[in-house]
Structure formats: C-alpha cells, structure tokens
Amino acid sequence: MPGATMAIPQTHGGQPMQRHFNPYSENGGTILAIAGADFSVIAGDTRQTEGFNIQTRYAPKVFRLTDKAVLAVNGFAADGNMFVKKVKQRLEWYRHAHAKDMPLRAIARLIQTMLYAQRFFPYYVYNILGGIEDDGSGAVYSFDPVGSYEREACRAAGAAQSLVQPFLDNQVRSVNLCHFPFHPLLSYILALHRS
Image (cartoon, rainbow, N blue to C red; front, top):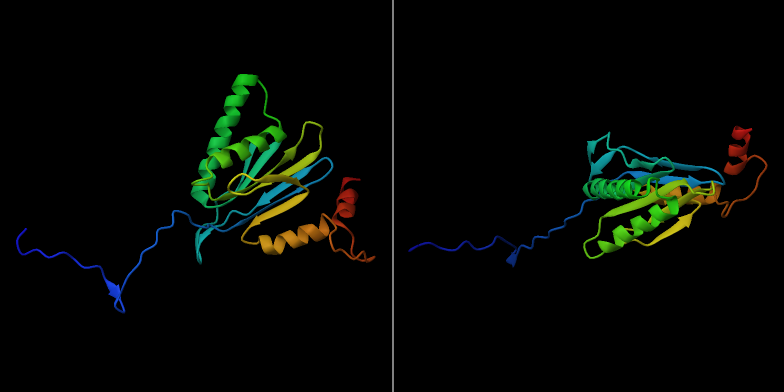
C-alpha cells in the first residue's frame, strides 16, 4: 500500500523489548507418600494456584489407578491431568488384553517409559506412585519429569517439599533422629494404632 509505514517494535530505554514464551506453569500444591511393611499412604492437597492467585480449591492431585495402585501428580495441572488420563488408558488396555490389573512394579515401569518418551518436550509433572506390591508389601515410587524413578520409603513433592521431606526423613526413615523418651517414632505410633 502506498504511504503505509511498518510499525516499529516498542522499545524500553532505547532497547528493543524482548518477549519470552513459556509453555509451562507451576500450579502449586503438595503431594506425599509413605510406604510401610504392609501399607502405603498417599496424600495431596486440592488447591491449584498460579502465582499468588488461587484458581480453585477443588483440584484433585491423587488418582486411583487400580485396586492396589494410586498416582499422585503435581506440577503443571494441564500436563498432570493429561498424563493421568493416558496412564489410565494404558492400564485399561492391559486389563482388556490380560484380564487382570497390571502389578505395581509394572505400572512404575510404564510411567517411566511414558515420561521418558516425552523427554524432549516433557510433561511438567512430578509423580509419586504408591500402592501394594504382589507380595503384599507397601511401595512408593517417585518420578522426575523425564522418567528417572526409584522406590523409596517416603517422598514429598511440590510447593511444600522443602518443609515436608525433612520431616518424613526424620520421622519415617529415622534420619538424624535423637531418641528421647518423650519423642516416639512414627513406626511405634502406627504399631500402637494397629493393636
């Protein structure tokens, strides 16, 4: 068009403005899991945030996969919901093909494979899988966004991880614990409740 001029990008102090695109968002929240000799406990809050804004107080982070397996997901909520949906779909395919539920150890390997397959544009989620193994023992598996995982006695992830994990290490794993008579171990307390 004659007489048209091209718009010059806005500048700040004589320097061009730079815009950044980030496809991920941290949606807050905390998840944790504890495994014992014959039990596993998985917990998570339901608050979803972005920055200082609370988007909802009713966003679950803990999902039942089978009768013996539960997955807790924390990080970017959209990736977490999509990942859980895909894991449930794979477990349903397994159930139809084999007429039984996938064992917990195999679910851990499945999740590892699914996360590693997306390593170049990963799901921005931290997963904790908890449940009961085939031998009846409790198990907790923790995963990073690209699929590295390990079986642990306890694990926390999310916004309060730096507060919760030292407490779990101290009370569940008995790391750096001074045994005072007035300070009973969590395992002792749980044993009292079972009897």
